[in-house]
Length: 332
Image 1: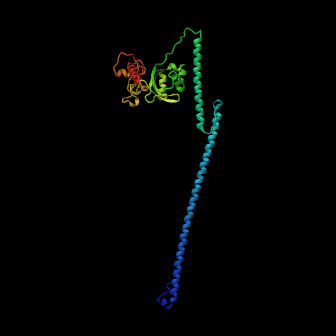
Image 2: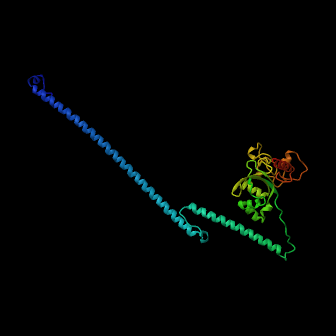
Image 3: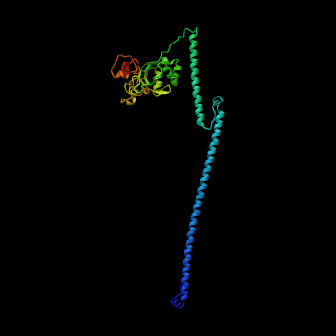
C-alpha cells in the first residue's frame, strides 16, 4: 500500500489518507488486544503447570505413605508370628502366671520378676537345707571318729556411724529394724544363720547436731555388713522408711586408707591396702605375701604382726578410734 501512495496521490486523494490512518489504528488496537490475550494465555499456562506439579507431588507422597504403611504392616505381622513361635517354644511352667502382651518390655519385666522370686526361693531353700543338715549332724550319734566338727569364727567387726536416726526408735529394736528394712542385710544374716542383735550392736549414741528429734548411733557390725552398706547401698540404709546416712567410724579415706578425711578430699595417690603400693588393690601382684599396713609404715611403727590398715588391732586405728570416741562423747 505504501508503494501505491506517493505525494501526488496524497494531494489528489485526501480520503485515502483517512483510510490509511484508520487502517493503521485498527491494526494497533488489534495488536494490543492480541498481546493481552497472549499474556492471559501465558498466565493460564503457568496455573495449569503449577496444578500439574502439585498433583504429581501429591501422588508421590500418597504412594510413599502407602508403601510405608505396607512395610509397617509386614513388620507387625512378622513380629506377631515370631512372638507366637516364641510363646509355643516356652515351657508351660515358665509361662504360668504371665499374661502375654504385645509389649515386649512388659513381658521382659514380668520374666525378670519371676526370676528374682525364683532366686529368692532358691536361696531360702538352700538355707533351710543347710539348717536341716546342721541339725542332723548335731543330733547324730553315729559319726565316724575320722570326722570332726569345726566352728567357723565370726568375721571381724567394724564400727559405722549412723547419722540422724529417729529418736522414737528404741536402741534395742534398732538391729531388727535395720535387718527388716534392708533386704541385702537380711539375706546375709539368713545365709549365716545369725540374729540381727549379734551382727549389729549399738556401742554408744549422741544427740544429732541438726535436730533434737534425731540421734546419731555408733554401731558395730560384721565386715560383710559394712561392705553391703558402704558399697551396695552407697552408704545409705533404710530405717522406718527413712534414708539414713552412714560413715566409717572413725572417718576413713578409701583412697589413701588414712583418717579424718574422705576420698573426694584426698590429695594423694591411691594406695593398695595390702602391700601399701601406689596402685589399686585389684591390680596388686603381692597378694600371696604378708600384708603391710600403710599407716604403720608411714609412722615407722615396727615389731608389729603383719596386718592391713583395716585390722582392728592396728595401733594407728586404735589410737584414732580412741580420739574419735572421745570427741564423739564430749561434743554434748
